[in-house]
Image (cartoon, rainbow, N blue to C red):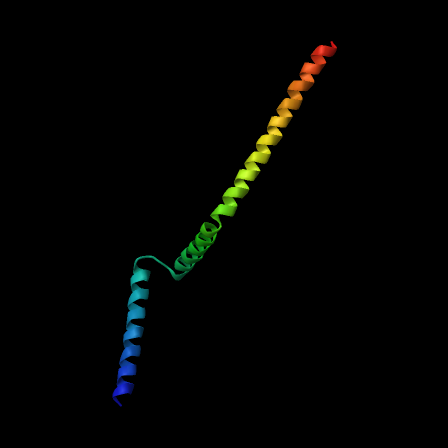
Length: 88
């Protein structure tokens, strides 16, 4: 009998606390959708933070490749002008 009363009392406290928290967040303008979005954004940020080294290496390789392409294009353009000047 005492165990049943304790269980009912615990459930009532849980429901009251949940209602209080929901009311407080509703009064503060924080909706469940906003909390869900914040949680998913935090999970995405954590996933990206765990992959920071591969992302950094990939960015470095992309930058190095782009730099090499621009340098080779500039060298080709310069040498082409130089050879045309010699032919004239």
